Image 1: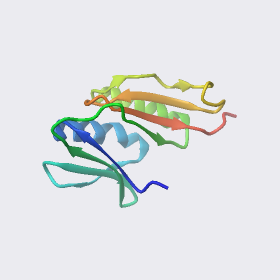
Image 2: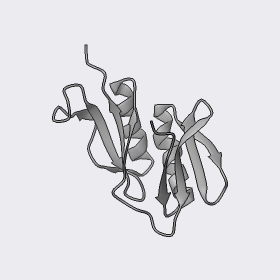
Image 3: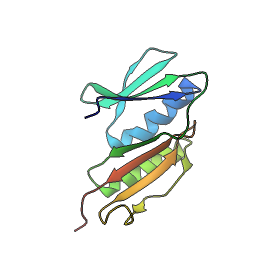
Image 4: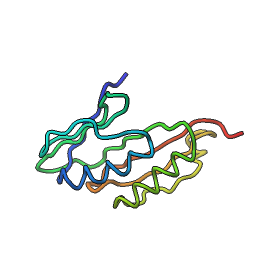
Length: 123
């Protein structure tokens, strides 16, 4: 079981602004920040997703946040795009993964592939 994940970002303020808005529909909020180098996001007083300032960010990262319903996936996508994210796959079924997979993909300001996904069957 994972306890937390940290990704490198090239501009901490820009990334905090993006993640503050993009993760809000998922019930995830910024819980910790040291000001200029790190910020931690989570729920119920537990930070499990961290961003940290790096001289160069590493792309190729894919992080998926689980949701309880498809509407939350849609809300994440809308918030992330409004926050400056780039579309990497709009909300919708992904039956090639499995029949109940519903996800949305957005590239954050550093090119990390951030996803919200719901596995709950429809109906």
